[in-house]
Length: 301
Image (tube, rainbow, N blue to C red):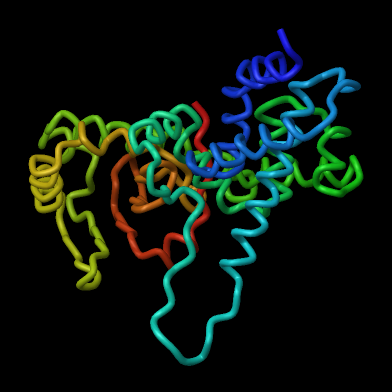
């Protein structure tokens, strides 16, 4: 076996791992594949004869490439807009798919990582995201991460700690009440999935107020029976089996809510106000500006 053949074989053996690192860094399957391809190009141009841990070397390369891509994306998003001219096109979000990507494969990958986690990762600064992903998700030591982000080991540890608090909602989560809220929201979701009208009524306050955003503005719906009928009518038109895979419970502003995030891209949030075991208010949020203002965190099992 020639040196090039051995190198190609070793790279293919690590491709799945590298793709996983890049996807968690970038939140986009097509961009992750671009990062992995760039790692292969750098490997093919490098002298790795003295590299003792090729998998670790490749992980570092993919991490560096992904970090550069994140910084470039952030810089483009922050470019000042011209005062005059045509309507600007919004910058591509972290999980928008490029032409040629496989939506089904990306959906499966997003589910395996966790929709809420991808949403939260997308809010982190690039160095925080890298430190958290490499250390907390792939057990890379801080002394190996520090040179990638250009920080000391202690500073890198702090980056990961800040990211961890954001992911877990440690700064926003009350010490009590989460499990009780989750039981109510779980019951609501189960009733919706089953098309169970009475089951939905059981967890809704009789005078529940629902504020639903739409392109036409905010529509208010008052009363448990009214909203349950509307929700089940929507479920009949668009069965939850089709879109439910993109739905996940998460912490929304410190309370249990529901996010819909196809491919990890946040598109809709249901924020609940729960008291005495009943859902009293619901905000259905879809506008990008309001979605960006929400504090989303993962909800442990």
